[in-house]
Structures are given as structure tokens and as C-alpha cells.
Image (cartoon, rainbow, N blue to C red; front, top):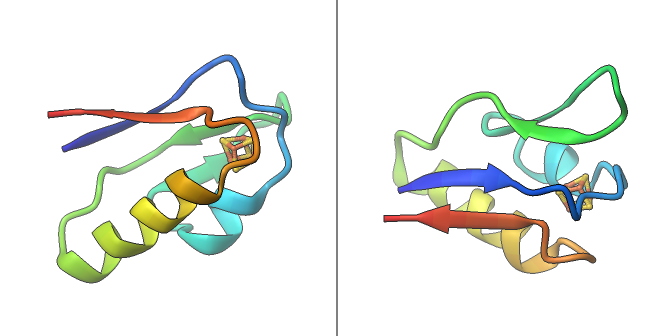
Length: 62
Ligand code: SF4
């Protein structure tokens, strides 16, 4: 399961705060995926970040 941050990101920082193992803020102020989750706990947090993103900018592919 790979997560991706699309151009809809507004840089609110929520995902990186919620799941820093997966999401990280870039110098340009937007989030990106720096590592995909490798355990269930991280996966759960990444899912939470995805559903909480205010602009639905986090997507995933199988
Ligand atoms: Fe961007 Fe969404 Fe993460 Fe906020 S929660 S930084 S809008 S991807």
C-alpha cells in the first residue's frame, strides 16, 4: 500500500503531526511521503491522516 500526497495539499501539517513516520513537510511547505508504513500501527495512523486531510490530498494505490 503506497500513499501519495497530491497537489491538493495546502500544507496544513496535520498528516505530518499525526503520522510522522510516513508524512513529512517539505521545504516548500507541502507534505510528502518519506516512507510507506511497514507495520499495522503506522498503517492505522496513516489511514487516519488520509481521512483527516482537509483537502483529501492523500491518496493510496494498491
Ligand atoms: Fe497537506 Fe493534507 Fe497533509 Fe494537510 S493533511 S499537510 S493538506 S496532505
